[in-house]
Amino acid sequence: MPPSASTAQTPASGREVLRYGDFRLYLGARFATGLAIQVHDVGVGWYVYEITRSAWALGLVGLAVFLPNLLFALVAGEVADRFDRRLVVTAAFATMAAAALGLLVTVIVGATTPAPVYALAALLGTARAFAMPASQALVPMLVPREFFPRAVAWVSSVWQISTIGGPALGGLLYAFGSTVVFASAFAAFAAGAIAVFTIRPRPGDGAIGRPSLERLLAGIAFIRAKPAILGAISLDLFAVLLGGATALLPIYARDILMTGPWGLGLLRSAPAIGAAAIGLWLARHPIERRAGHTMFAAVAGFGLATVGFGLSTSLWLSLVFLVVLGATDMVSVVIRQTLVQQETPDEMRGRVSAVNSVFIGASNELGQFESGALAAVIGPVGSVVVGGLGTLVVAGLWMRLFPDLAGRDRLIEDGKEHRP
Image (cartoon, rainbow, N blue to C red; front, side, top):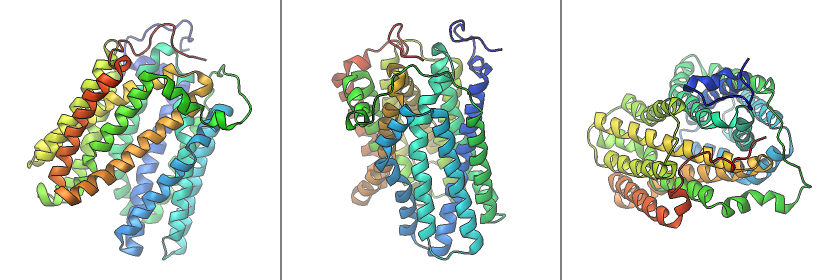
């Protein structure tokens, strides 16, 4: 039997956190749904392009997934705080399974228009909007406080591993037909829903008030009142917004590095490889001191790696820079997620996580747009280099604007954490 929260000691290795059965179930669900999302995205991309031969149609798929995340974020946070988070995540994963099943039916009947794909992509995006804050807020209820930084590292690493293997698996499955792709995605989403449903998290301790506009906006107000959290979230937002080099990988692969689709696959996998490796390392060696300085150093490393990638004309050197880019980003992710969850009272974790997910989602989407738009004006190399230099400027500026974050020593400070 794993030790209770009151008796558990600081773990001797990263594997100690895996002694908690509910956390293992959560990791399994995270991995299954991560694979399913990647396989699903590969299948949708190929299918839509096959029936439309239109890059615009592919862009509309991404928009259909993103808009629900933006529209339902605040409501999703309130739902995560008001209802059983385990059931919210289960319902969200089950809805994703339903969307994949709908795509399977669409393929079987031989639809020749992308309209049903857009509708199902929007359904998937809606489910993801509700899944993100509830699943993030669920993790602190599965492990003791002192295990939490390692738990965040494990969760992030498992997600990155699914990001590495998912696209390749999706491409392999597509060789057997689009029906196999969407049937596999359906099965993986369903497995994730079942795994989460069997979890028995410890109950939270927050009182639930009546629904109101004030409650919906409470997550935003809380983040504004916490300089360390606001600084960490906004730093990540602008770093990813400016350093969106991955959006230009197809151009680099074809026109600058002179490689083929296999090279593009390597370039896409490299950041996830770096992120997964450093995540697993942090699971065994959590950041115990100088957390603020470590986060700013990681963001600066992210900017330098972006500049290096932008200037590189060698495939293998570019891969090295992308691995470093992913590794430094993972350090920032682990610190940010730990700060957000540990500094937030349990009754508000859903709403705060929802705001966090909007920041991160916006940075990824807008970062791709910023890189593409700037590349159209000054070229892809200029766009990437300017973005990396901009990240360095932001890191320096944020150290002055958020001294509480820069001076943060321990991720988990005694007497300040909020645990059920």
